[in-house]
Length: 425
Image (cartoon, rainbow, N blue to C red; front, side, top):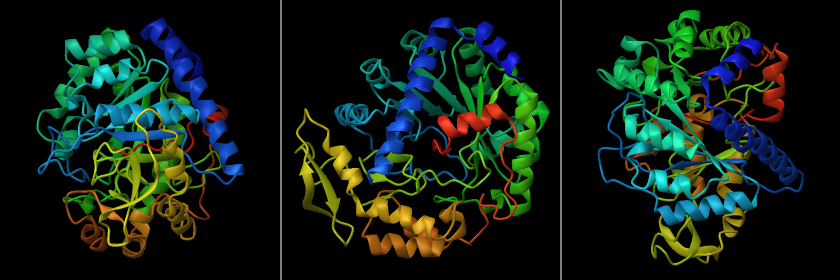
């Protein structure tokens, strides 16, 4: 498998783009994880990777999506994004996942990426915007890897994402392949599509389209349309883990998950502080499906005043700011995250209950914790009520039935690079 993957990289990816990915993503990514571990030894918290939800606007309405795209539109200011990225660089973090909504709708996306040639950007996209112009922009920039969301073959994918989405996404992937661009596919595993997406046929299809990595997620019932019938049961989860390890040995593609470490133990990246989520209104959130925060990257009452602010106990935005935030000095993002009682409390809350997902396992307890933390709901809905209505379910924490990585390549990668590198589809 490893030789065949190396051959694919050599023949199917532009050498310039491969070198950039190796330097900016792999090498700098390993450095970011090492810096993160050193911070932990000092009792400090700042993630090696950040998720930036550029906008809540989206052209699709997928079942189980936590983004409210029907109401008021919100987007991060490009200056705010620049300052967040600058703060990340000071902590050795050079990898940024851009998501939404649909990030390729975001005005000024390509200019934003061009301003940071020393960083690598993963764009989680529904794949509907890979026209000739955008594909050429990606090729020229070189520090971008699209991650196209596809949830199975046409029938399975369009059942969740909408009619004709599969066809359009596949057409876009063909253009990416023709330009020899490094890209991946993000597949959300559900109770309905698990047999299909964990089959040899599906993985071969993804390889044929030119993807070099396939990033698997497990469905979570969140949002206004939680669709709990898509949830994966415990026995299915164990089978999912077994199949994933088998597929890794057979196919020349990187099969990535963020759910288990090299020992097969469950991982919650947000509880480890591996990757926080900046919402489209600047909220600093523990993970993408939980649109709650006590801190923002700007003062909501006085936008542009140059401060990181903490919400009051009633969830409203107060002028009780942690530290000054001059326009040309974003070091205080580190202080804001490191001093956040909410983010540290979230880690403690999760680690006391599970190694898995509290959204699935303890939704009602999670609601009580969020209320006690004085969070503000940035979902645009009543997301607390949605969580409270959830039914406790099993997650990927398979106590007593852990299945460790049995291939040295993935043991190395999970120990050194992407273990817990959180990305939710």
